Length: 544
Ligand code: G1P
Ligand code: ZN
Image 1 (spheres, rainbow, N blue to C red):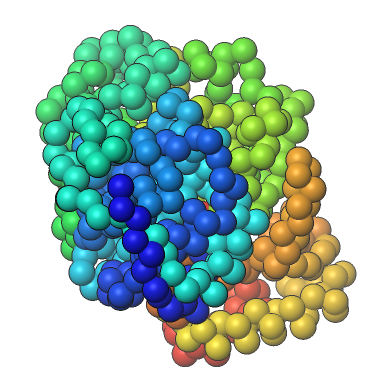
Image 2: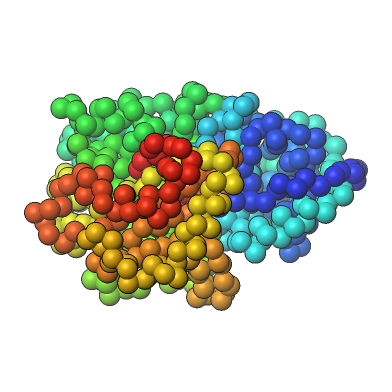
């Protein structure tokens, strides 16, 4: 095998964000751009005797070009065994599972998650380590710093690897396995949930289902599991064929981007259950007949019902949520007498807690939920978890949610995103907020009195690392919170996220529309951050 050393020049912008490096496709297509980043990852990680890598992506434009390049560089860096999804496809949770199952050194995931795809849209790459989870912040900082001074990368000559057919073959001394993207994942799901019970409920029409795969990676996974294995009627999965540009849509499962599903589920023809997942299959949105379950409520309800699911029947060790996620799951943890952890935004912060066995379930307000079965969030897993609860409890989504609120109180919640704000304006907004922190405590604003105002910093209880600047929190005496942070996944300007929540223990007041119930806090958020005033926007780009 002839290893070539190629001279290159560093790019200054290869700093991974909340979840890997995401840029416009055109940025990735610049000479040596992807090569530099892949070499930076491989040069930075501890050299190991384990030479197996998993590779796959969500099928977006540039997916398979990137896979061919990664194989050539990884092979030149000593990797010999490659497990690759057929046609280059693997969902993020499936990669996580494959790394763990086949004890790989790690894996490359090609995806920009919920960001749009296509030649003029976004591409992304992230590296997951041997526990199946995203590289830690220490790792990604090291990738970035290596990329700043890189002057060459290694590459071998290799014919184009055929990704179309499953099987094992050798090419230029490399062991290549092309695997069915769904098989191992479907087997894992069957081991966690009561498939017979769900099958029975589907067969007897106790649960009618629609799943929107948004022309993204979960199409083949959902079709196999929901239709072929669990027996849901053909057509249960809509938009099931993965497309390079996701059909021109934004593969983000929320009420703004799943119009078809929303119209169906908020009509008189609504089904019992509907769900959607994102570009790479790690997110989920849960809907019932005329009800949307906020992700913050979803993780709380899952924790409260975990004992009904075979894999979690013997109890859960603890739970974790990202800081801006509502406090609903904390209330369940308290009732179950198990620990609840609050971590910064981003799945990588759950890894240590999962590895140490401190938590079993975790979730984020951004439509992410999962458990210790993998080290990523897992969209279809969440869907199956809900189906298992519905089949077991024989109640509607609405009834389950209402009973949950009656028992624990409701954490009324919403998030307002201001996308593509000029970066200087966004940074000034954050500075302006920081400048108020010292004086806000104990001040009253209308019906709310500030209890604390700070910038969240996380002390990891397992490796003792400290992650600072993880969002600004303003907490009120009644438990309400307003949180501000800048997105770490956008590719254009800056996105300001404002998270607002209020606790409502009184069941006679729980059926309010969040925008109405939170109106006063929403006003206060503008008073504190002045995003409308400073950016000239009149309303958020997306409300979830
Ligand atoms: C967003 C979400 C975050 C999630 C990440 C990756 O990151 O807010 O919870 O982990 O996408 O899916 P952000 O853009 O806010 O940095
Ligand atoms: Zn995703």
